[in-house]
Amino acid sequence: MTPAPPTGFNSDLLERLLASSDQPAWAVELRRLACERLESLSLPDRGNENWMRTDLRMFQPRTWAAAAGAEGQAVISPGTVPAVPEGLLEEAICQAALAAGKAPFAGRVATLDGRVVREELDSAVAAQGVVFGTPERVLAEHGDRLRPHWFSAIDSGADWFAAMHAAFHRAGAILHVPAGVRVEAPLHLLSAVTPGGLDTGHVLVVLEEGAEATFLTETAGGGDVGTPGGCHCGGTEIIVGRGASLRMVNLQNWNRGVWHFARQRAKVGAAGRLQWTLGALGSRLSQVQQDVALVGRGADAQVNGVMFTEGRQQLVYNTLQHHQAPGCHSDLLYKGALQDKSRLVWRGMIKVDKVAQKTDGYQRNDTLMLSRDARSDSIPGLEIEADDVRCTHGATSGRVDDEQIFYAQTRGLTADEAARLVVAGFFQQVFDRITIPPVREALSAAIGGRIRRVT
Image (cartoon, rainbow, N blue to C red; front, side, top):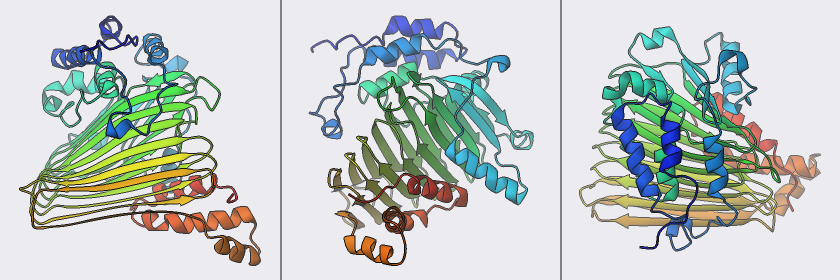
């Protein structure tokens, strides 16, 4: 085997970072094993199906290894807290809660360049046995409870980025909800970076049998086009227990100079329910693997995706709906709009194991072109081993109808207003599926503010 080229992410750097770590020995050992794997890997090339449409020629790992080594302390002292960008969802939830006279969040975590800025949990929620906070603290205090779940869902050796994250992850959040506990208010994680900063946050969500919760995660900050930008290499693991119900929202809203790499996977147990909403508005380049595994009889997953690209952004999303048990249902709907010279790639797969009889799976991807220079690639797929299933997929891609724009203009709208109206109608189908009104309204307003006239 040809040795991997040096990238700066190595065992020496890891040991320096571990010197101030309070994580349990078993978690440290997982990091070291991932680092050994990392040092044997090269960056993914275009021979890999998931990466063949991704251009990594300008990505320089050494830049981000230097950022990892220069981040300093894991927790920012209260007297030196820097300005952190306000989260789009955070602001929307706070405004809605203020109008209703309710507390906006049951708990909040905020990080900047992998350092903890804020960590809080409502005392009444904590009294129910809910655990929420940064991995560094939570694993140190509740390691035995969380050990079976930590890095149990995602494959830390899948590629260079997965191994890098498994070895060098820092900050993020852990949420553990005991059996039968229902958390009414949402929990929130904001991950931010400064221009040239690095974020490697890891998110673990565990809902035990019959538990219910809503968890919102979002990103912000970083440099814009032509600046040092920033880099995110993250992971998300979701474990939904028997009969549990989780509403999960991931909003990628980096500035347009940020490299964004993420591996996200959920496992839904028997009769469990997952509504997973993904928003993608920012970054220079995004490469995301989003998987849902239905592992218990009668599990249900709804996946919603809202994407908008502009400039020369490129977003690549690979999705998998893996039916591993009988009688499960999955429904994925991604919608994206592109303007300028941006590119959007979606590659989706429904996989049905032989034992997963009575499967009901659906996936659909629709894209709307607002520019003749934009490009969209939609690649749906089915891999079915069972014989009693109902699985369908579809993909559409097209331009805005000029007659629609003209008609709106004859009613007194400008070209930009007409374009916003058409795009709002295009996204309405997926917005109607989002059951958290402030999230729905915030995403709609954010996309509307980016739309310019159709070219």
